[in-house]
Image (cartoon, rainbow over all chains, first blue to last red; front, top):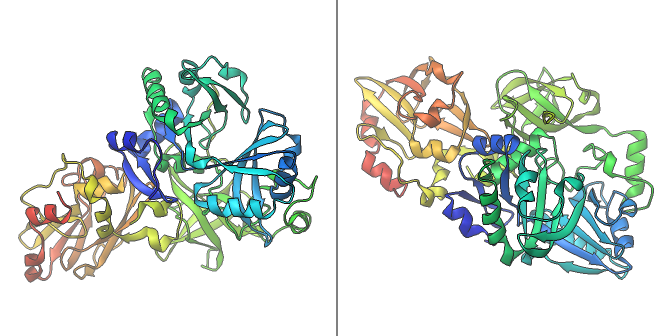
Length: 363
Length: 157
């Protein structure tokens, strides 16, 4: 099993460790609910160093990225980040990812750990543009510092004016005395904050410094367990659950990152889907009757006829209700539609709702 | 239960019995509590026998591994359920686990407090967090239950 540069820190903190995407990762430290509320109300620090980082460089970089990703990377200026996906040839998704534009001939792609090898091979197989690909995953650590107090905490450790970095923008600057650190106003929680990309050898120092700097604000280490409940309250897709090799970005509600201003893998089929409509859609729902939806449960009508499948579900700590996402026939995808979730052979009533489920209160 | 399955995999995988908790046995918090007077099962349930009636819950180890418990789903009140038969399900935020009868019996009642306060199972697993009361139908089965020493050995405590 692989491990991140911070594994000893997690074990020393008493984390419950699990294997995730081949890595020994912390799932929780003080308890999932406690960590979830800490991130929503104060700040939490996540080790997400398992994520993959590929640098794409040279004159062929943008043409390659344009070919393999669904969003239009040509609109990026240096310092901007874009959410995108890699469509496959069969109507599905190879992976979802972030595209960072560092300069005209240097981009950073951040991919899911579980798909790292698949993504690398997929992108490499389309590389006839002469782009140079470098896999920096093994030597790169990633700390996500998330929550309403994250910016104030991190500001103590960098001369970069963090408030001047808008959402989905980044800067490369000094952090904890180390040069060339990527400070990115992104995250997977909907709670605000930054993600810090650094070299493995700096990760321990950064981890300790951030926890120390955030003591007053009540920062806590946060594990993958609450990362999942936080992202689900925002209805952010999780690859392997809500999107995969068989789900199209149009079905998944990712039309906003599928831009037909250029040609890309399978773009003709996806354009047709967008124009003609799709037969199923990814929706958010909340339980009306008592029960917790889980990945793989069937979605039915009142008579038990199968209408779809749950892709993610949980009791939502910030909402005090059970929520889920799943694919349903398009006729049932409108908010207000009554659906049933088959839980242990019983049909439990739920209702399709608008997402995100959770809205961060105004400051 | 593989906690990893909360991120990927299917419902069948995430709904397995408590026995699989052993993979975390090396992470046991040494401050965990296992009362001497109770009997235990390999499925991480405890049973307090009182004449031909008994009270059943899950162990401190089990609640710790499940994490924050949010729902206890038991629909077997009034039913006779055989030894190791399913009497309900416990749901934590991200995990689901089945509950099995430590001995054959008729389920008499569910702890009424758990409907509004399922976290009692985390906070007081042997007290206010009890799950069911039952009438024992085959007293001979009591001899198969684990003593506290045997249970601690099971979980490497």
